Length: 265
Length: 289
Image 1 (cartoon, each protein chain N blue to C red):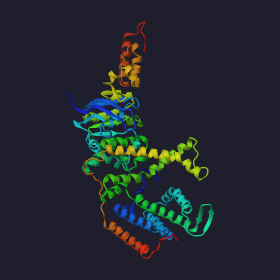
Image 2: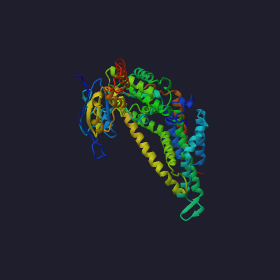
Image 3: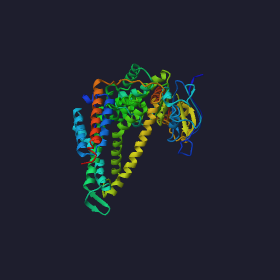
Image 4: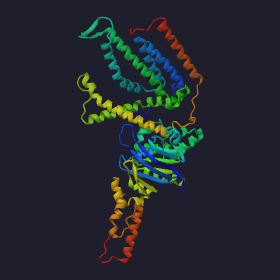
């Protein structure tokens, strides 16, 4: 992570040159495909393909590592909680009072975690390779009011900033003697509470200030906003949308016509 | 009679979650081309007052007129063309992925042509020495540079009235001098400046008039030289006179007039005093500064 304001990594690649609308549609269709499949093999395939697409766009593997590390707590939580709370049918591997652990539950956990990671990487494909201003312009051109597009763009762009706030607050609390991440699961969870509360308050304050700053610089000025670099759909963009639509249709047929991919195994 | 560009009449304001009003029936008129300094203790209502100038806050009672028109029903975006606002904290007002895009954001909203936007941005970047970092993300820059980015963003809007809330925090001496040179240029062009500050030396050096706020009301409004002589009033508003004035007043028994507001005027008067003494020669009972 560069420490910059957003995830965008400027490069000269085929993916960077695509119109944001083409990428939005492709990611939307790919994401929907990721949601309708539960088969671990299919999801792993999608994940590998997403990594390959990012590599072809000259995104360094260190960025993948960065994203995997950010996702790790969520994935671990899914891998633990899903089998514990939704064990599903089948013989028990372990049984402790009301808690059961089954092969079905474990595979469901892997499927959900893999799906979450795949969707995150699909979204990253868009964010890592699209200039934030072009993304906002693309959303506007798809019919979203400029202020909505800007809000979406800012929300995505401020994810690293919010994470930075969390890190700073975490360090500040620890510097004042607060012990984080020690003890059992409940104690660990509780130790993060003051940090999360402070992060949320700081993020709300930041968004409040930002809203005032946007307004003070004429966001709702009653005139058409000047566009400095207009984005235009090219043949290759239509080709990408068409290709994504064909693959998506094929995946729909396989999933619902042939019934493949409904279960994690 | 000079033209009034800002007219505040009977302004009352209170926040929803606070029982006590922050502004209590306040009246203020600012003339076109005036450099006004707004001073007062923390919580006296300075920022709350200035946020009414561009519609970020709306009066609970009373009225705000900007450039002869009631600001009441006008959207903030429309008022932004006339009233530029520099917030206290640069952290909360920078959102662009690059310095260029950050500075261009405001002019782009005003419906100017792309060429006009580019011309304004280039001029602002050059004015604040940011041309070399135009493509860099402002978020990773140092505080002083980010402050310059916010000033350039304000300059690119080219408003009639500039409200600057503590603009000098984090600026080095060079940045400070450049900022006030720029403000002096704008004032010479007929722009109106409202400076919110805790720095009495700055207020006394640059402002035509200083307005003292205390508990949501205007306690006094006068040219710096008159205002900073009123010790009782300053005490009441929890303010202190500029150090150079206090020094000049402390030297009154030795012949200083005690009205120097700037180091320059102090040095001039002191040098004149010493020269006169040297020419006359010290008398036996005369004190020496």
